[in-house]
Image 1: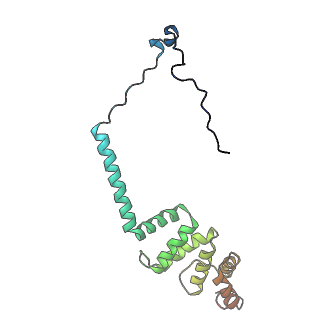
Image 2 (image 1 turned 90 degrees about the vertical axis):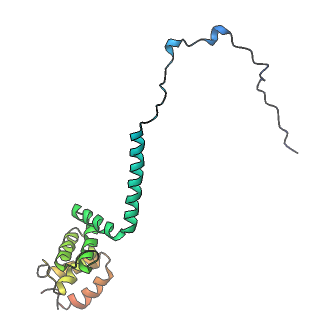
Image 3 (image 1 turned 180 degrees about the horizontal axis):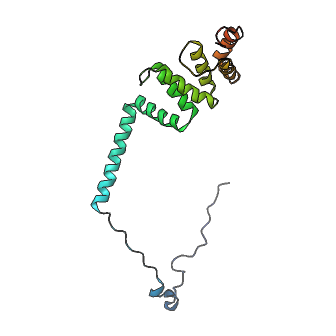
Length: 174
């Protein structure tokens, strides 16, 4: 059975009774809230807004065009603030010479800072750097502990180094 639309029971305009004039003026002029009209901003505000938009567009272009440079400086800032992952990234950049001059001593220094905070990959890289003869501050017997820490925290390369080099005691304890 088709749905039949019913008429609305709202009164029509002709049926609405008019409001008496006495009730029409319930609010006096003194009680009204006067809202000031919005004024147009001065020209220098508009110029400042345009300059900010242009500056933002330039900064976005610079970040897109020089992504490696921005990444390097961001990693440096966070590394100096003490973030272990940023210290690890910065150490890799110094180790490989990516965006900076190759500096193994500086790389090992950043690996040490990150490893001291518990970063497993940094601990592994610090120990391997020590075993390869790079200048580090790793004490005798500490390389084995660093490799074991990395192995216990999921660094797969550390398993191979621990079972082939450290168990035999060839280079881990020098």
